[in-house]
Length: 116
Image (tube, rainbow, N blue to C red; front, side, top):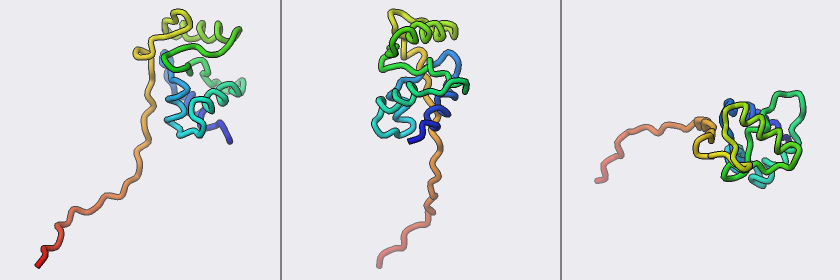
């Protein structure tokens, strides 16, 4: 499985906003859900400007281990996001990706034939 769709979506998260692993998985329909999103973020390639630090656990919790947890906290704070005890106010900073408009076929509104 390629994680490229995950990285493309993470690149869209605006500065000062975050997304949870679960929301990331739901937005992309990832098999395995949040765990798969976590694996993808753990395998983030260097040098591609992917803002990995904007992806958090449920309820806005920093889940990665040191020394990266401290780096994630610093990066979030540099974007104006307050981090208290490894957690952020998810209601305040959560970003919701725009859903792609599905192409639906419009049904004609012709009246039904009258029964005799």
